[in-house]
Image (tube, rainbow, N blue to C red; front, side, top):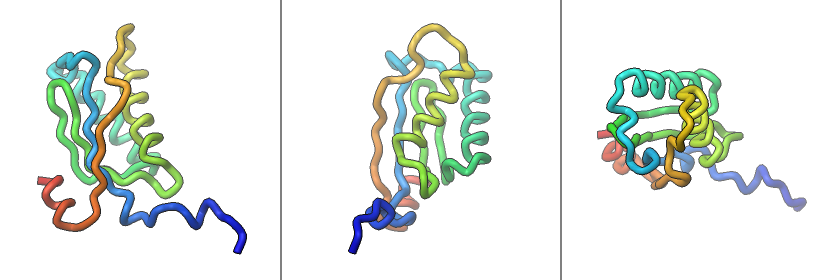
Length: 118
């Protein structure tokens, strides 16, 4: 059998994650309502472009929690880049907006999905 990258992709039901992204230096960027609304707009835009499915989210003053499933052809890293990078681009400030990395946990069953959603 010939090697195929397609054969090694995880099934979509195993591609749901709880992601936590933290603002640079824990600045309370989302305490400003306009910034929080801009972030929500970015989530809606990425969902509308079918890059990611957003199941649930919480926006805190200095970080966000996302329960998401990337599109089949989008890696988790790329999905988060679309969201964080899209927000940073639209915010148009000269300092770093996000910590460089993010934390994620894979959701493997309905019980964990429900717990993260709550």
